[in-house]
Length: 239
Image (spheres, rainbow, N blue to C red):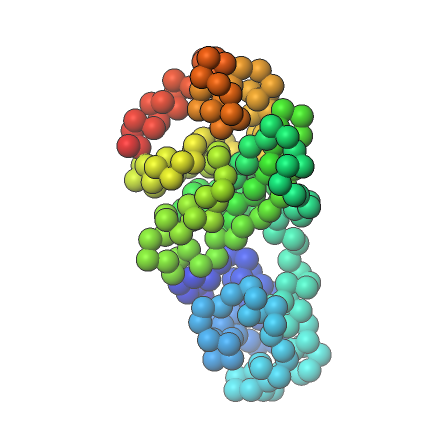
């Protein structure tokens, strides 16, 4: 039932909505949605969906009660757990000596996404003593972009570090060129645990690239041996 640009979250909501209407297949509902609101199907369109928009064609025989339940699923009001952790308020300067970090994620507070296919980016502001989720940036729309990598990079171009489970070489080269520092963790993990390791680095002797972000003078940039050489090699491969 997938169509270009349809995210996993929207596909799940459409599937749940179809199950709320007897004898209606997901494809039938998908066709009705496309007729009602046109492609691309987006979260904002579904959240604004009304029962009257579906009460026609193949769905006209569905009872009002079943339509109401289906619309709740389509809007994401029921049946789907919150896809991502809830960001907290943040104003520039709230966390002194901090950097901004993006994690490729498919939901909740997990680092579990491939750069090109993740559901969104968890954006954290972190210092040696605090890590705060300040934003969640959806990747919906990337599939329709002329340059998918550029579109994704632009979503997080205010960040300094990007964590991914995997990333292709050409994409990694563009990420590095944009000024983002990519870190690949194939096993992923919980955001808080991953960022705790970076906080230990911030509290100790960060590598030159990180010290530069933090504004340290050149003579203060002590080489951080653990892992830096490996990332130098990753950058050389991607370039």
